[in-house]
Length: 273
Length: 258
Image (spheres, rainbow over the protein chains, first blue to last red):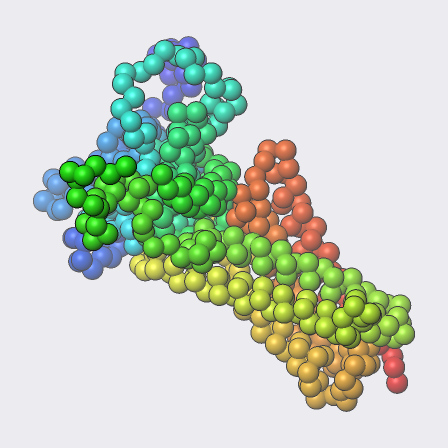
């Protein structure tokens, strides 16, 4: 029991002062072309209330105090909405908790005495920058290829100006929840970016505003994706790793729209004035 | 009509389109099917469509083989029927050869697309994870598709030598379907090869028969829950029935032709 009353609705805090003694096995790599290797670090006295990234902050502070090089890792908002954090934790992107980004993963999910293996995401299109940080610029190439509406649409229109069935809006929103973290690529045994690309396609292709450029967008984005990434073999690993739990149903939509795009775009092109 | 003041447009100096689709229109494009097949998504379509064709064959092959349990006469009559399909219209075995050609094409494309996709996928992750992966959704079948496919492919070559071309070391009589099957499967080692190959086929179908729906974009909340069930039922049926033949011949239930 704690002395302070928890705020109504919030979960009871864990017993104060409960800490874990952990061993971290972290991938260290000085630069993109430098050879990398695992190094072990003792991490005693880690509070169960820390997030995974806060735990790494503590370890880094200790490393700096000992004049050693801190571990480089990507992070930004730390509230699960920016898609900057990454990390392969014990063989799973974003660690063991489903639907959770690394920044929202808490140390209470681990047990005292655990060895935690932390590796950067591996894909040809995601080169390691340093230690655990990778360059996910390849995702930007895909979005640049057509993940937007070309015309300037001005400021936000009135809500309900364009009627959209609720189920369609919901599906588009599920796809738009993608934060572009790259866990799908990291999880995929083929290093495929199908879930990311399909989410970026679906959140526009499902809505009325996205129809005019639907097929141009689909062909351009999928072709760009294929230049950079592997190809889907329907394992479903991406869906399980996605911190936003985006379903692979969108990949089926990508496949359907890509065939349509290939047919329709040729038809549009053959229309000479 | 053209004004006298403007020079006649010459074919060597025309203002070309500047942007967008107008420019793309002049891009050289391969025929649709070839261009589509060049893409990885197109290869997945080919995997799925040829997969459906091969599944149709596998199912029909299994149904035909069940006639083994009805005795030599029924089995050999069915074998002869296959050669006689559409006989008054086509000469004997012609239609069977057309089916075979379709099947061979399907196999060649299935293997070619699989090879192409494997190359793409290996290039996509040249540096493997140094730590052990903890797979959540990928199953044994989905991760061994290449190996189960290779096993089935090699088995098909063996199977053709065994029962269609030369026989493999038993008294092979061309056209005597029942006798050949019985004599071949009487050998324990051969029976074992048939069993292992069909288990690999079952594994391949377990992932493949589900995968088809995704690859072709057949995704709908109304029937999504049946997709996995269909794959399990199809793979299970094929495996159980096909594996029963070598087992039953070994057990002496069928295949006594003296």
